[in-house]
Length: 310
Image 1 (cartoon, one colour):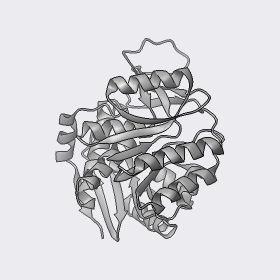
Image 2 (tube, helix red, strand yellow):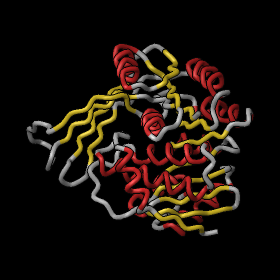
Image 3 (cartoon, helix red, strand yellow):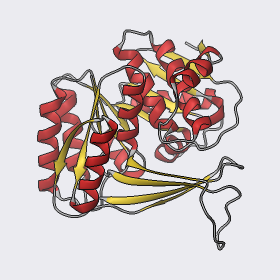
Image 4 (cartoon, one colour):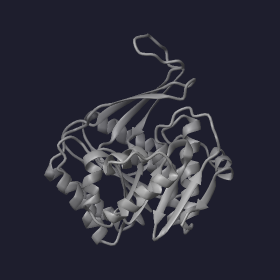
């Protein structure tokens, strides 16, 4: 089982608007309202690919209750930590002609140390069933970074495989929990390391530096160029076919879902990486949010190649 933790959960409202430009009036060609946040996307994809996953995180208020109801209707397994406040809403405007998306994210509810102690206790309880625990996305405003590091360290100390997909100061805080596994895109890795990462060799060099800073495994996504994985002295690079992107939102979450599910299922590292890249690509051509079909995944997978670098 994969436990996905989204500290800053959101209710996502996606509007498909061809040729979107600011300052005009439009009628969307399609609208979707669904539970959102990186970890929820991850759980959605794990279930789609035949795995088992529970999504966790803070929920609050009227929006939180609506989100929980939608998650239940979707068939998602959940273990929410209910707190005071109001869960945020995010608006995604997807341009079906250009493949670009405009994302407007509310900040989210304010979290303090007491709320993080509650989340840590809830996560540790459910982690006993999990092969991988994935902490995904931003932290709510006010979150003490020390509490985030402490939660990750407690899970690593319990012998768990802990993946972190975040950026900025939370990523730096995660690296202080020795033994975590890092999944970020190359822009986020470059910001953390003060590097300009342009290609796969540079990404693999960045992975080496992240290992030196305490990461047990590193997966870096490179958009159309695929992704690299560095773990246990091995380095791999997987590349997808050339595709037309409709909406890449949640492609990184789809990648991590398929990667960790592959590792849980006994795939070697390179094959797990190939599955991750295929899932991320299938998501991008299907409209984002983890809403892609199995046929599309398998079609992309058949055209995705992986190479062992070291």
